[in-house]
Length: 228
Image (tube, rainbow, N blue to C red):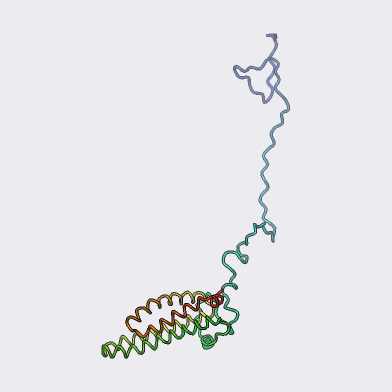
């Protein structure tokens, strides 16, 4: 038993005061020498990578490298290699008058089927102009002088469309994909025009028939390789 006359021991530094209902026995000494937890150390600051450092990739091309996103420009926009004159790039409009005579006549390096398609487009344009000119006199004989004016206006429009046809056909043989797409649409429209012109005995049906044949030829396998 404890002596009631014993003086209480002094409380150690850092010890918790006794709580009611949890009074330590007499002579209890709190443990000594418990190490304090280490102080928090901040992580080292971020260092910029050295010049020339390349992050490891996952096998995919990085932005700015060949093969990322769109295909390389040289593989998709360069004109066909077999042409005997410097043609504009495939993806450009290509409207300029430098060496225009050679661009119109020269079919060197163009597949045979596509060459036939090209000249059929030129023939369709010329036939449209001739048919419009003949229609002036045909309409004049049927309806009199009052229809000569509209016939002349039609001739002017046929000249404009003929020039546009020939220009797009030139771009077709130079390997332009947009030209083939435009001529495909015009060929599809020529099918419907052909049916109407045959019913109404319009001489333009000859040009429409030639345009349909030209549109078919430019999608044959030999012609398609020219646009690869």
